[in-house]
Image (cartoon, rainbow, N blue to C red; front, side):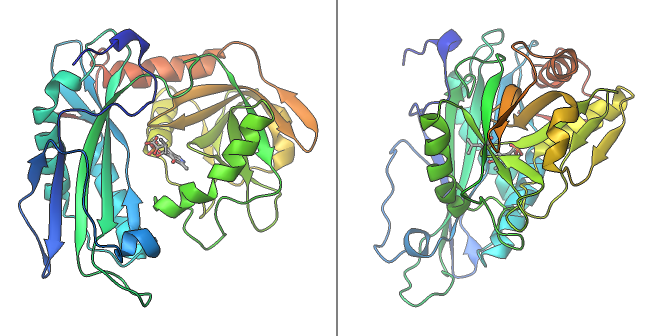
Length: 334
Ligand code: PLP
Ligand code: COI
């Protein structure tokens, strides 16, 4: 294994192993680590035909004191179970979720990027229906897999601001659909908008609410937040947005810093009123937005990361790498 730690992007690199738990006859087995990066499934598996596929994303960090810690895994466990309930799939008890993460990271410990490289170990829990059905019905067999990938910045430029395009011809999620949960199908629906965004020379699609196309929802892989000219942290409130754990954490950090935090519908006309706009999520951390093109009009925020986003970024990554006090007890030591 030879990894160029300082130049990692967000690309799949096979690690040593993954862990896999199987649910059958109403119970989870005790999980097996495997160095085989392939899985075998019945051709009629519900994950292949009927969308019984859910995933999560979280990160493990090599901290300043040499220890490895994971950011808020209980939150991902709760969100995965919210997703699973919606698609009638077998829930994963939090103890198994955390145990799976501990075991797979321990077995892949050399894949956690060294402290100081800016990298982290992306942890990807995946949950799939593996029983056969031809009529539409939930499976009675499931696989809960956790794989890990050493990663660097999601966008090549790192903290350099990226350009966003407001998507007018496609919706990410229906108002009462599956936008709030992490089903694989949501990402299938975002591939074409993502492709169009890139073709037009932008990096990040920004979705509006599907019902009225009047309100800001979220980016393709991350939540939206804006900093108003008077220093408020504002983020959209909508049922069809994924409840980002990074956003939730940034709201707490902003509030700790004395900022006013507002989670409320954001009308598209408000885009012009923000001093700074950011995309936030596990993969993108905080990525500043340089400009947003909406209905043919460009709203410009800046060629460099703004001061408030920079402060929030330094605080959240400072907690993650063990450089700043973890006063909310967000980090789980392995
Ligand atoms: N929104 C979408 C559509 C995402 O895929 C993600 C990534 O998980 C997020 C937001 C950010 O969520 P989190 O901060 O929990 O990673
Ligand atoms: C994450 O940030 O974990 C995501 O799931 C976003 C993307 C890689 C799908």
